[in-house]
Image (cartoon, rainbow, N blue to C red; front, side):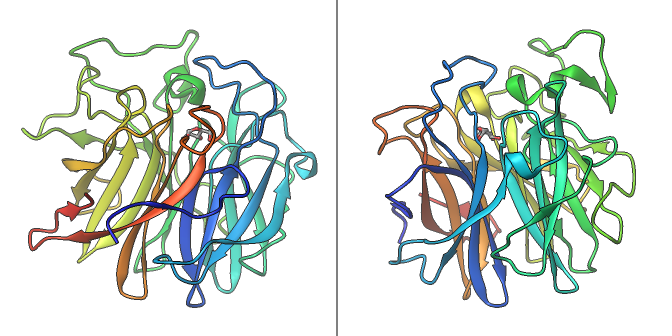
Length: 318
Ligand code: FUB
């Protein structure tokens, strides 16, 4: 199966994070809806209010089964608005959902909610992760058990409001020829509730081995995802306004990651966002597009397609 197919025709779900827990495949998407907020470059029209969990028996044929609501914005004590992308990791039989949401000052933070079941419901912590900012957390558990969160996103994702981890007095988006903004990574504490270290900027190198510049159509925009294949770290991401999904490969969870290729060409809709997951010995790319909503960028539908690797470890996705 190299053609993508839709997973849940009866509602709009985006940014699918696919994970395997206890031999079962789960998907944790954002839940799009028609909120009536006008579209703008800040992404205000993505005004989501809850998350559902889905399980999927067979990515080749089956539809996703809705396990119900697992977290709602009104249950999060520090909530402002806009429940964007999330991801889930397991540690010692507990499940940790890491999500992004604007606080009451309209600043995106990362939060944690916990459950003893992958299907939730998840109970949110009282405060966001200390020192967190921006959007699109991906929670990656390495083979040694260490857990890392990758995050960051431009424009409405507010990454341009920071230099390193420090808020800037004014946002700064690098210009052509300047080094692009890059995503962040932080190791999590043993209880998976806080950063164990100050977030580090990770570097994506171009084909010549130089840090990507702002005018490179393959530079990072949002939607970090990390997976491991044959001992190598594959960092994949969305290029935002050039509408691609790309991947880059490195030897450490902190990078640097060298650009290797395009995973997905532009689809109908503005955003591209995805996850990559191995299930029953096969590899799958989960993503979304806006075909079922007739191109409404804020109403997205999740899809899956099989991918494979060649002998060099390059991903074959078309
Ligand atoms: O779903 C809201 C935002 O749109 C996500 O956080 C971004 O990655 C983009 O898909």
